[in-house]
Image 1 (tube, rainbow, N blue to C red):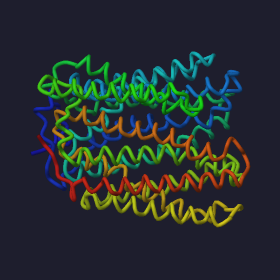
Image 2 (cartoon, rainbow, N blue to C red):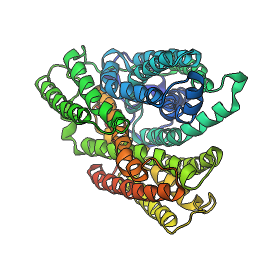
Image 3 (spheres, rainbow, N blue to C red):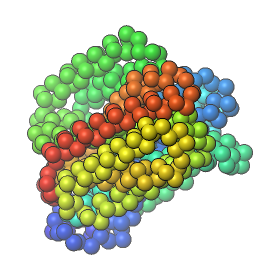
Length: 492
């Protein structure tokens, strides 16, 4: 059997797709371009989650906005993405993954243009929320399209590249935001961080329409509107207080919202169970596969440690060590180089080691984190970029070995008809993890510093953060035992 994407033959519905089960099938030029297109779409999302962070001071200066208003530039985006991912995944199953991806990309591209042209903070925040809508529709189609297009070694290689994009984007966002803002292209200050998405988004739309082959779930003929409403309510009630709690010093209403969110989530799961034979929004039978449940747990931990580590590391480098923003960006580049190398290992091995590869990555990252922590706690107030190069690059190397294989092994046995739903859940786990990590930042870093900019205070606080990050890595390593020992293709 041959993959339709590998042969470049269109098919009207998922039921007619038969990805190759051969381990050495050659990927055609058309399939390669399609893969690049969906990975670029993923990269736009990853970059836009963090690219705005280093530009916030310039945005605040030009708009005169206060800190609370400026925070909504990130909170509005991440909240909208989180609440729409599950629905976005099911939309692709029903109406076609290529069609929905292109619609989401078009919305994201238009919103990016509006961000770049915005004259006031209110318009900018609204445009960021619209960006989040586009991403929530667009991103679940990436993994779903890869899952139904490739199989065997081809799929493992594709997911390895996905892991590379995931790793690179998360650390390059702040660097790109800083460089574009500092360059002040055409006197536009921070605006190019959004405007750069316009030509890239147009390229994704044009090439995606030409090279991505349409696929749908044959039996998913309608959208569960009740489930969509309940899932969105649950995500808002959970993610919003986790994002805003620190800003408001964790008032009672934050905990009340979290409790309500968990209650609504329970109602949603009960409603989905009743609709299990009637096109539910979430296919709960997916969780009967321990690999899928374990993979979502590992993805949740990965998101948590990213949300906790990257923000606090930035503050440690600049406040704790007195690095300039450019030098701190260089540290991120070291991490990115390491992540790229680790992701390339995952791509080259093409799933041959199963769960052992991401588990080895978690162990390498944990050991590197321990070495880095010893460097910091040994009283090296003058810790230089050169001295920290080895542990930072090894940390990136370990993390780079994790992202792609987790996605591959988690989705390996998912039926193609449920690819969109599974992809939406997988991406939601990451965003929930980031939200939990952000909330932990307030408890384990900001509470320890008490708002002080003193070097020793920030160094000590960051040392405490590393214990939590190490714990998240250990839990992630443990839950990966639920993943299969080897990658098995699924062509149903």
